[in-house]
Length: 143
Figure (spheres, rainbow, N blue to C red):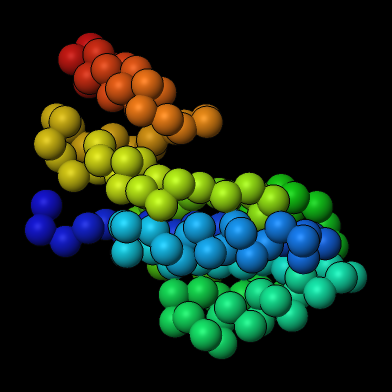
């Protein structure tokens, strides 16, 4: 696979001004660069919406959608029509990811592990989890 597949990262945001910088910075500093970050301001009443706008003004890979509060699932679903990636990832705005998170998550998508999956699922990611996940994918593909 010569070009890395684009991944759209949807981050629902609601009153998380205290945590948002750590979350978005962890996404912007990924070693896997072919991602777009869609911040969905779900009617925040703190400074979260303005912080989202600031990130979008400073980074061409960050987009912001503002909407009335509808909850976490509603915010995630609201962003789907706006994605440009082949795959989508959801990251909660009070969480952050390791700098190589998307490199590891996208590994099965490059075809080197066999057939390219339609979906890659993970929970807390560390090397042992990734190794188990890779083995499960191989077993699934062999079936």
